Image 1 (cartoon, rainbow, N blue to C red):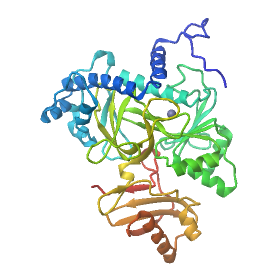
Image 2: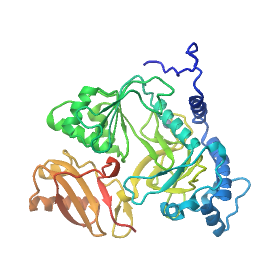
Image 3: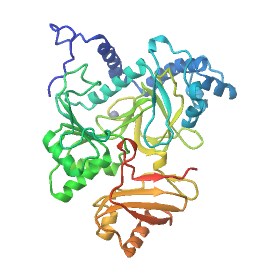
Length: 464
Ligand SMILES: [Zn+2]
């Protein structure tokens, strides 16, 4: 592997570089992250609570939403913030942020944080949430993104390719769009190889041709797209390109999907957990399939429906407290995902372990009794259960829950199922779902991806 040599501002000083000031700041942050990842869990918690103290004081003084919410509950900030006090703070929901409007924004941003720029969440979770970004949150995002690259020991001289969402007409096949370097996260600090982007709306045959030509070392895409490519190759007898790592983004990757990708591509599969509002929440351990919370960036809690902390192995709702956003502080903010903690990692990092991320609330089936379930489907693609049951090839599958009683199965098939076959699939699905839902079928030529190119295999429109 080419040694990673930092770019130097002084041409005659290369081996120990003198990086340009903004990059030096980021490297200074990274130096600290390199050390803090090895702190014990207790040391990290103590440091987090000290930083939390600064955020809470700032929020109480300058963010009307928190001042009012805490006053209503009679909460006074103690001199020293401990675990118990954190647990007493109210949960902030997306709806609270939306309704608070400007009351959720600080009226006194410390000048060192720079100016506030606003972003909004996109994607499939309904009404967007507006959040503030500052120079500090941006630098943090860049530092954690670089940490993720370094953890996974990517060779920056390699070629990085992505098959992702792009506006219609942009990065279209056959060429896609070429880039000279790995972009803002890496390029200012390290010399990099080239990149190339292909619009995810490209046909699988076009994607494969493009991949054979581009020969990526690293490939970024949605898990659903990589699995579709895998199935396409198995069907057509063509070959997948040799890549060193697959980096999946945007959708939940189940253990079964991960295994299917590793088996077919023979590559390392790397997943991560981020959100638009707070950046890097958890990064896959370099030595395991689970995730380490980016504890220097966020306090991440997992709680049950009563708001009580879930022990390791128990699934609950994810709450995050951003430790560096002083523009629109996110304090015990409910992201809308379900996850579970795992035991400490043998790699030695003290950063908390997330064993599994189960995905969004809207991707959970709501049972008639009100409880919700996740991870319902093994991959039901071309070699999945419908194929086994009926012998009919399935190229796309989506399950949509419309009510507590009925579920729609959308299918893209080589031919429509007969009513007898539908009956068999219905029985299989009812067994799988654990309840005799009324199941109806829609046969389509194509199931389009949602906003930002994400494909959701299961969507529930039921709200409880
Ligand atoms: Zn680890």
